[in-house]
Amino acid sequence: MCGVVAVIGKQNAGKLVIEGLKKLEYRGYDSAGIASVSSETLNIVKSEGKLINLINKLSEVSNSSLKSVNAIAMGHTRWATHGNVSVENAHPLTSENRVAVVHNGIIENYAFIKNKLMSEGYSFKSQTDTEVLPHLFTKHIKLGNNLLQAGRLVLKDIKGAFAFVAMSLDFPGELFVSRNSSPLAIGLGDKSNFVGSDAHSIDHLTQKIIYLEDGDHALINFEDVQIFNMNNEKVDRKIINIKAEIGLITKGGYRHFMEKEIFEQPSVIPQTISTFVKDNYEIKIDLNKLGFKNKNTLLISAAGTSYYAAMVGKYWIEQLADLPVIIDLASEYRYRKPSVFGQSAMLVISQSGESLDTLMALRHGKELGLNTNAIVNVEGSTIDREVDYSLYTRVGAEIGVASTKSFMSQLVILFLIAVALGKKFNNITTAQTQKICLNILALPSAIAQMLNMENEIKLVAQNIKNAKSIIFLGRGLLYPLALEGALKLKEISYIHAEGFAAGEMKHGPIALIEDQVPVIMFLVSDGNEDKAISNLQEAYSRGAKIILIADKNCIQKASFAHHKIEIPNFETDFKSLLSPFLMAIPAQLLAYHVANERGTDVDQPRNLAKSVTVE
Ligand code: F6R
Image (cartoon, rainbow, N blue to C red; front, side, top):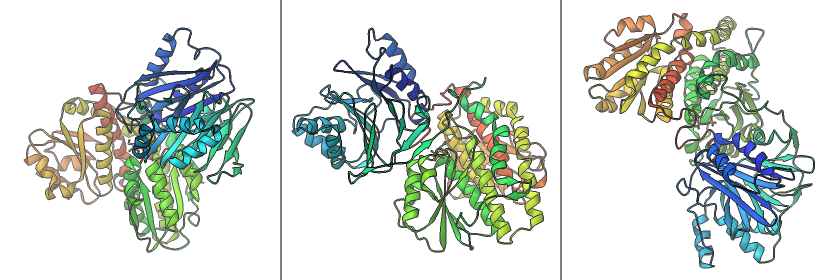
């Protein structure tokens, strides 16, 4: 993961780098650092913890040249992969106080290179994979190479996924940058140039952006950006004009971004809906582009919460369109030899558009000859740029690490794909399609009604906040919601939580039930509710604390539950087909309030980052 920013040719470059890093903390926040060059000196300041610690440290550094007019600086926010969280392991990593490097990604052959460099007399101060980079630069520069030549030799030495920026005191007006699989954007200014892990991190400096392609490297100075491909041929990459986000996104009066993002769902989900539902009941999704000229099997691949959205999508597409759907975890798909028999299209789902697992799965699918599509929130992200067809969720930036509004918007698009496919292949009628579209248009108000249940959910949160382990159960369309509820809860409250298909309990997980273990079930009257209630009864009989979030009918049937939260009375479709949209809300609110009760860092939970750009 990690975020990198560099500025060359601007007064107060250090300050501008910090502004960029503020926008990159979603990529990692366990330590941060900054390097700048002034009067023949490499100035490095690093600190453990969030960026604010670095900012405070910088303000304490008296007479620091970092505070003054520096023309060249670069910075980093870290998400530790190799080496624990410490100042030594924070970036920039240096060599002989002459070369500094900030890096995102993993140098896979670093151990071999490190041993070799150590035998040549280089000493290492960190446990990172990154530190081989500055030493390799030093080694090649000492042999008489300029920064570009040295950088090219470094690229020959290393293997892995990376995006890095290198500066050297021997070439004080230049930066060498390169990317392979990890994202990197270059910004063009007036007698100044910029580098960032994403375009947003430098949009306070320029709107003219170039995305490097895999294997590219560039030499950047105040006036010029020269880009080369992996064969060292000079290439022109497209200049894209981006819109600047207005200032920093704020919490808008909420305590956390996650809370704000949960509560803004009724107002942002219409943006997703209106992109694809026209004239009230026309779904504008190009099924030919999506790879569905004919009936085929659809492959969906994603990670984490986006994968659980894919699971719901599978159930919907199979039910509404009678088309087979295979879902695959992105991190697994890439390393298998999957059969593409009967498949023509692959759909990846990614909020960030940068998850490396998902990107690699997408490339794998492409190599296997599949038409590639994405449901993605960030336009211009790597996945967006690499697929044949993107469907944008358009819910605005999601800052809280736990995905909430993105999940909801991914569900909207998956549902609409299912309906559009159902209509195309005559599995549902035009009248049914219109009714479903009307229901989708009513979705924001249904979500708003579900949000009104917050106080009841808060009480449950207070009741379970000290549990050691929590079990979520669901059946059918609500099984993926049980998985999502457990993921959300564990990632921000740090309580162990697992989601199970209710019917699977008796095949093993029921052994986990002991006195007072909270078992939370999402349930609606979908015709199979009696089976789910039997599963719940089995947990109740073994002493579990039963929390049932369900419609009136189910609540009456499962009167034994210890806590019953009745959802508002929606019409039939909402209670069955559309139930995942409804139950996403209690899943999110419960996780949020349990985390709040426990006082954890809701928006930036430990060990995580918003954009997972390592494998
Ligand atoms: C959980 C969460 C993660 C992401 C996963 C994929 O709340 O946010 O599980 O869903 O890392 O991220 P994207 O969708 O950006 O590919």
